[in-house]
Length: 207
Image (cartoon, rainbow, N blue to C red; front, side, top):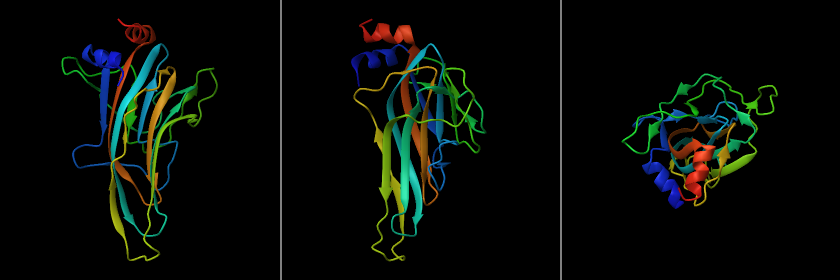
């Protein structure tokens, strides 16, 4: 991780959220659906977010056929802001420094049970997200050797921890999606650093 991001965490600019609790994962689906994400983070105008860590325990269910798929996608709608529509759980975001209170300048929701939209920064009509920047894509395909009796219960733990995290300047949105040909659920942890754009640049330039 870049050194100045560590300093920003110490100064209270780090954020963290967990989707799911204890041993209760949150549902994904039997497809990788772009409208109801596993997690959505709407980054408002004037703010910058840099994702620094994601880990997910994917409960992929019982594979029943060759080529059953399990997927996790971390991606960005670089032009569209999620403004809160869709049925979801509002997340109370933690600070990565326990000295500071919870809260975030971003809108954060998880466990979507209905479709949501993003609103383009050019003032266009709200529509389904356009994931034009992929950050991480995990996919697994089952191989049962052509024997249906060779079913398997699978648990996978993909981790995204970029050496040089992207610079997400709002308005835009960050999404985590999980899904597969067999219903997938997951427990997911996401950490990021956020600040007004000018403050992020000050730290980057050696504040």
